[in-house]
Length: 154
Ligand SMILES: [Zn+2]
Image 1 (cartoon, helix red, strand yellow):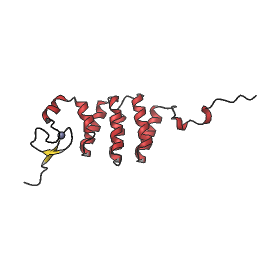
Image 2 (cartoon, rainbow, N blue to C red; image 1 turned 180 degrees about the vertical axis):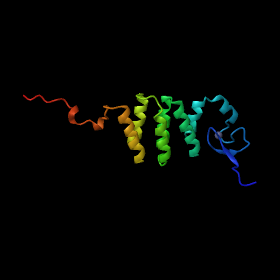
Image 3 (cartoon, rainbow, N blue to C red; image 1 turned 90 degrees about the horizontal axis):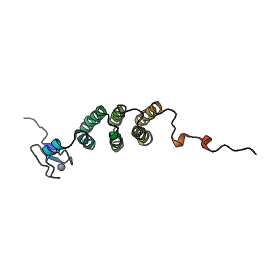
């Protein structure tokens, strides 16, 4: 037999634990109970913190299919937490595009990515989505001096 992986990740604390472990030696989580009693969306959101990017990607794609706007904050956090991974950032933007258009949480999430993500590809796509979904709404920084009250010429 070749070298196979000899451990699994705890689904709760992500410690490396023996393949046959039923209870995590690190945090005491019963793995079967966790899978059975934790709602699927909650498990997906938790998996956004998984150390393996392929596991995070699976959760990102699944959350996009669920299209629950209340997961937008967690997805945005994930993009900024793993901000060296451009592919992951773009996949998160793709999942955000499945969310209900016009939702205020979507606007907030896209604004954070457009302003804070270090990858230009992610920032510019987030900016494009903002302009498409929320036309005519400018961030305060973009509003010029027009906002000041008109002077009355005496
Ligand atoms: Zn654990």
